[in-house]
Image (cartoon, rainbow, N blue to C red; front, side):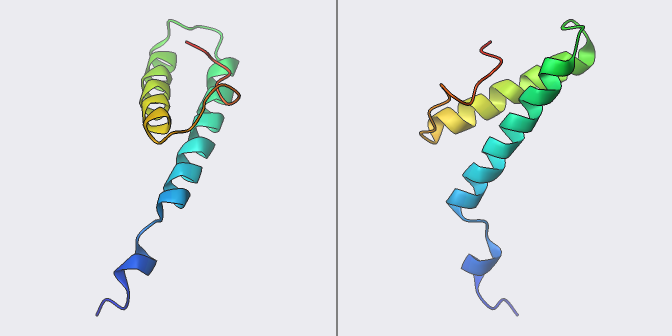
Length: 70
């Protein structure tokens, strides 16, 4: 029995917060990688671009958040 679907679903604010936190964490890892041509860095960059699109489409200004700026 489902009590309340709204309680079970993540709110839009929670989703944005999760994406912002992941974007921040991913950038910290990317800045630690010395070999920017490695497969690991390339995979991180793909996720970085995806998160950047999601956050921008959500109306988040990335000017202060984006440390990679690629």
